[in-house]
Length: 564
Image (cartoon, rainbow, N blue to C red; front, side, top):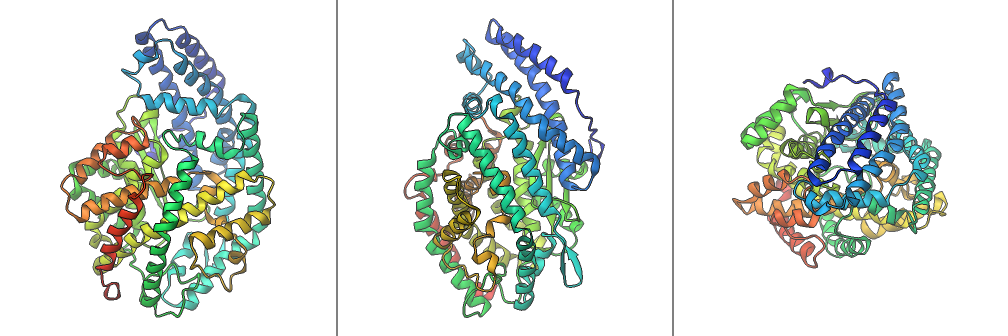
């Protein structure tokens, strides 16, 4: 079914709660595993219907935040989903406490019970009001960013639209565009500060109500960290700091030479080459057609996937006024299809959407028949392996998108995956310090960001841009506001995707089959077990980061980037 034909109707929550309560009562007294599974399946049908309705609202609201109908429906779901969590919590608790739980493992994977335990620890009805407030604050942040109207070059642009000018070959245009973008954040500084301050207080209150020492501990449960902890993450960040940050400094030095600059200013970082970055050729429609050709040629599995996406219009890709920023993939359970949301803006990120978000969507497409909806997708860090690895598997087709600048894109993409790692760790470290110190003032948080920024990204020069020098760069990062502690997942996944890249560059014939195997497993295994199944090294193990950096640095050094 085409996305536009998918009907949305606000559910009758009173009737659904009555039905769910009856099924939960029945589940609780099921005499054996077979009867339990029968009721379990019926419950999952109801859960899928609710997920579908809430996701249709989320997609259509982010497509147009000015749509009054879906704005009201978003407000309804912001209040309803936290209240519904009571029934989710009871459902998971009954599963956890079933006397024949060992017999249930023949149908329900261990990861279901592990995630259920995390959910049980991270919810009680005492935090429902706080969860509602958190949802409303998240929505407010998204609307604030979507409201940006930046006057530049005779145009009125949103935050996505200004991006192409920050990559202009003229340094004065780059500087002016970057400053015009940051002027929006400076003008709304108090609003961003207030939203985040309220978020920190709300999340800290949640943690204490649930018996945690701070929100960091609660966040690890909410993020379903099944087989690693904060101490392991801290050690991992140290590896990135020691092994990757120095390499990124060298990458930036090469960039400085290519640009012919005495030093790189903050507005120079987005541009890789003096005569311009690799930018996609053609219209949005042509990019989509190129993606269709690529996935048709890549494999039979990707051919079926991309035809499903195109035939059913399961994406909204182009930036427009009142559209939320960013990009995401989500799944629509009742129809067993993914959906891609993005903001094309004429830069290479448009192609990244067609590989990264398509990687997420392809994984769901392959695992959608896993009968338990909770298990079709893995935990977040594992999801990102799927998307980031697809970026590398797609590299042989980049001529379709960039023509004779395809090698320029491939170099920038590979270098960018290394440059990203310290930044990703910076975001995670910042959040840890903020939530371990919830009483900090707004200024203390900014000082913390700038201090950590100088540690993880020591060659950033913000001279001439006061708001960045004062430590406000993080206003731009959706995840800090809307998905706390998610960002480290990207870095863990990147380290895994980089291993696939090395195997691709070495023409390893098993790389693709291992990738397909990984995707089909969905969420039936934990992160480290999925990594092992895919024939990859554990990012937490000492030496993993160093070996990957050595391999990728060797490849980058073999390329004469001045000739790209």
